[in-house]
Length: 146
Image (cartoon, rainbow, N blue to C red):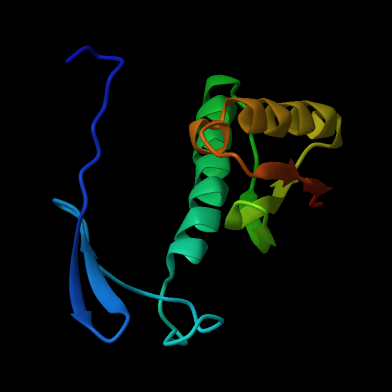
């Protein structure tokens, strides 16, 4: 296997009703279930839909962090919120759009445009978003603290 190829393994075990436990070597287990909007779904448990949206959000953050580090961008905080829209299409249900709202706080007003460019670059190079059929929208907010 080359240095450019990586494999990520998971396993899943059904536990009861419409729930299971997701495993991956060296990681904490995650309880997963059908979301409550579907018959037999469960409140308060991670669903495939939540994990799908979260994967795009986490990828944007980790890609931003890598590019910011390489660019020596100094920032104080990074946070985000994401929302995925599930729709019934002619091909069945699918998440058609994910909107991510990253918020980055910087100390220097002169770095605002540069910060926005780094967010745009992170959006362009996010491997998870690039692997999805969903439309991904990133609406950044950059603020300066005094």
